[in-house]
Image 1: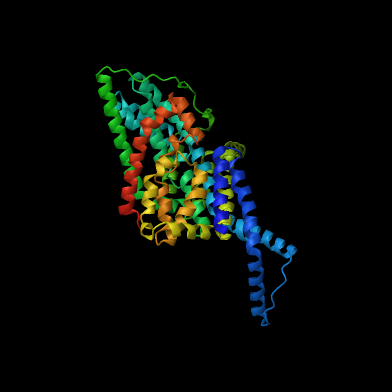
Image 2: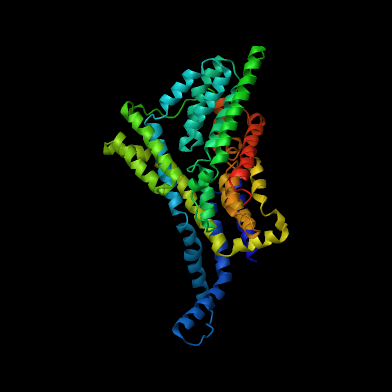
Length: 477
């Protein structure tokens, strides 16, 4: 019965999220609250008897079976739902939520301070009129812009910044869209990227104490090769464009919002001179601390953000203005993380997850236990077209991970394989993310054409990462 209840919970959450009937926040809280109470009601009698047995043993008295009334069962069920299910789930992802808040604030404020502006301008000068250099530069700019983990910010900055080069050289704008999409996708694997944060939160909810930084470091060899593969794609596309231009073949016409403006200008927040060098050094130090694991990610970003504000904006009112300007985005994302903690807490601690795992183990050959993670990784990019990040990482992945663990494989391998494509390289292709349509509007592309042009490259890079992951990152162990 618990297995059925678990599958009903997941299907209901997925259906509500994907149908846009309610917000993700409501789906992740309200559905498990209902099914979690049903599970708690079912488990309450056994929990009451177990507690009575423990009390009798501690007191050294003879055990007498307690009388279970409707009231005692109801009270126990409510207590279990609140403290044992949702409460434990929330406590498991507090550190992840805090890290996410301050990571968003840190990199968004770095962008306000103009840390990335000189780098972008320098890249634009270096590209000249060589299509290959333009493509590589576009990819590099996309990577830099995505350091804050926001797809919308990346597309709003990178597309208009690079578009004049493409128009001047009469290059296809779909090439620009593809390269910026690949840049945002590969950089979305970073520890503060949405998919990695979600994967870490979901695994922590299952009892595997892991942070986004630890997942990132664990797949770093594959991630680095993925970056190299993306540069290879940029070179290939650049050479194709150079050949097309030399042959006199016209570029594809576009009809989108290609003159869209960038984000609101905050020129009074830009810091130059020694401030810029200090900010770059601070980012490098923060990244080194994250990789080395000297401090927890949450503490690292908290301290780093305080230093960033004190040095660049000592004025208190200006500090409040900056924090408030980014608070909404941080709150919205973190509220989903905490809601997911409640969801995974219910599914795991109620026994639903164990029951679903046993059901899957009964039908999947045990010999597949160590190869399911690579299979998940290989299909992670196309899965991005079917599942949004919340429904996959909080609904689908935990069940797969638990089943793999029960069959002798590594549950963490499933998480590592997932972030090699699912809503990382796959997110700028998915119709389930609003940022995708921003990318399409800015570059003037149709969704179908964009998927046709970009999906093969994104999928190929993801598969390369999975292959490297099997060799160097323990996806088979």
